[in-house]
Image (tube, rainbow, N blue to C red; front, side, top):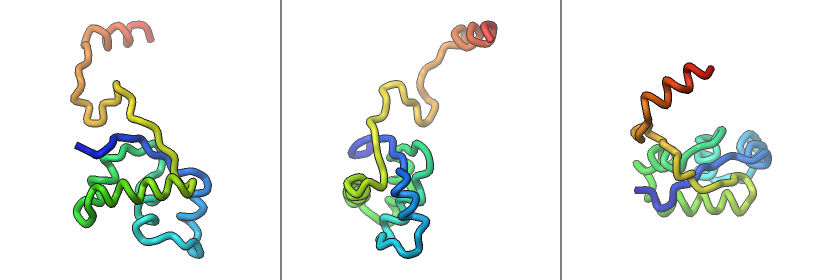
Length: 100
């Protein structure tokens, strides 16, 4: 279970820093910015980086990037179903299809 589940998005400043060969980004920060393209769940980053870094360190780097204004985040919505294992209703899906 992640320390905190959040959705991350790279800002324009983060994109410029990531794309600039002259930026002073550390390798870790650059790797994280490279993983974030659109709305990216925190588990995507921890899954990619946990082989080499502890989870706490990853979240510390995410906090640093957010303080620098290179990323922004928001809490995961209660109905966010990352692995599509949540419940759904066949009848509800059929009704939506008929209405379309």
